[in-house]
Length: 152
Image (cartoon, rainbow, N blue to C red):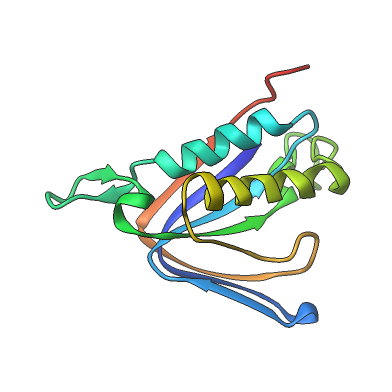
């Protein structure tokens, strides 16, 4: 599972064909890619890491506090292209990306864990839809968080 995590002053996702607009203020925009072999263990690990990641500044200006400490929100956007392999040729290969029937429930599990276990307001786009994502990166702060499947 791969997450591109951006600390944001605000972020939104618009899905025109579904008439959906979701937006957050101060928090994280997380682009989440699910790979073949990922399961509940990876979803649990990613959710815990996101909830505990200390990327927000404390009173001394140091990145030392978590999203819960600041009362922030998460905009979680599924993005299968994070599993793209660009090592050969000029067109990415997506053979490592999980099939939608595996990926969608795992993205939902990450959302549910953030919301229910960590009490973080979490908004999403629409799985598999074309989405316009507007990200106002704060810092900029951008991290890549990966968890390889634990069971193979």
